[in-house]
Amino acid sequence: MHCLPALKLRAALAAVALMAPSVAAAQAPPAGAAGLEIRGMTFVQSRGDAAEMVVEAEQGRIEPDTKMVHLETVRTVVETTAERAGFEMTCDRGELALEDHALYASGNVRGRTADGRSFATSWVRYDPEKELAYTDAPVEIEDASGRLAGGGFRYHVKEGRFKLLRGATVRRESGS
Image: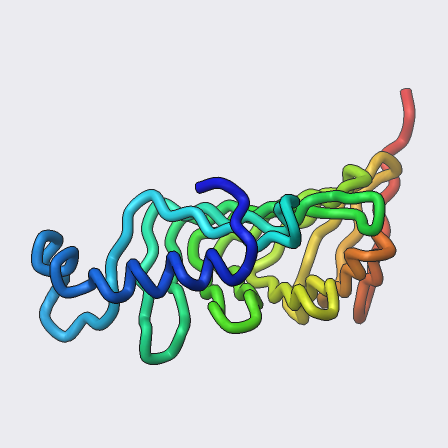
């Protein structure tokens, strides 16, 4: 999918949702399952011609009633621009809100910030309006100077600033 302005994206998702009966019949979702199942799903949030956030999943289920997309095997990239640092992350599962594009990533969450710091935790929420990625779960962060651990983090994407929470420990790697 090419970078689409938000209105075009919403229109495209609405068109997909309207096709749900014919697509659902072809894919035959399990009894009791709601929404539209899609394999190889890509979501692009853009401003003008530039992508701001790209979410790719091996599989997704759009639920028109709740305006949520449930994702499996997910890769997310928040693009780096002149105005903000970015980051990328992968996870086992995710939930994407179609109204505000908020993302909840869970299960084996791994990420890397624009300046090269990597992180690992069990879940992360990303609020695109506040440009804030955060977790209150235990986290390990690795950078060029060593490893840090804490009880969560706040990553202010616009400033590229990490704040490690509760009980932070630092382990510096010794040089040889």
